[in-house]
Image 1 (cartoon, helix red, strand yellow):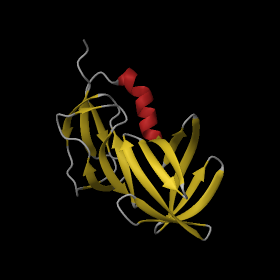
Image 2 (tube, rainbow, N blue to C red):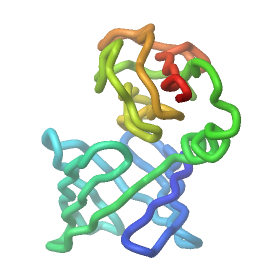
Image 3 (cartoon, helix red, strand yellow):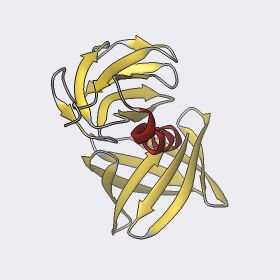
Image 4 (cartoon, rainbow, N blue to C red):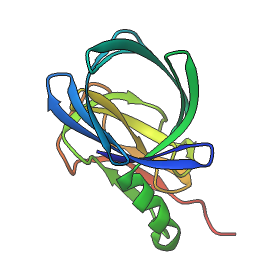
Length: 172
């Protein structure tokens, strides 16, 4: 999966590719490393890179924003996956009616962040899908109201399965 990660004014392309059981090839800009990652707590990840082990604490701040504490350094990051970025760029032009969001890949629904009837902002996560041993927030492509959620926590979904529908607010 490809992400656009921003810290302050710096933006970088990050690509994650599963390379095996808990193994990932992480490409940041032009540099690729192989890491062994295991979740060791609700917000703690144990990481081995080039034979060195360290922990990273991840604190979600809502939407695509989160803080990462690694090796004593705190990073305030915003990570938007390629699909969400493209949707958000085109949503303002296209979104005149309800938008149904589907699963990018097969996975398991691990959390519903919002419920039917709640207001949502573009980019705000609505459903968390676990795929390839990683939790992937699935954001709303537009501002609006969640009018339908077609999955429940614990459900397994296939790629292309509808997850939720967002209806834009009425134009005034």
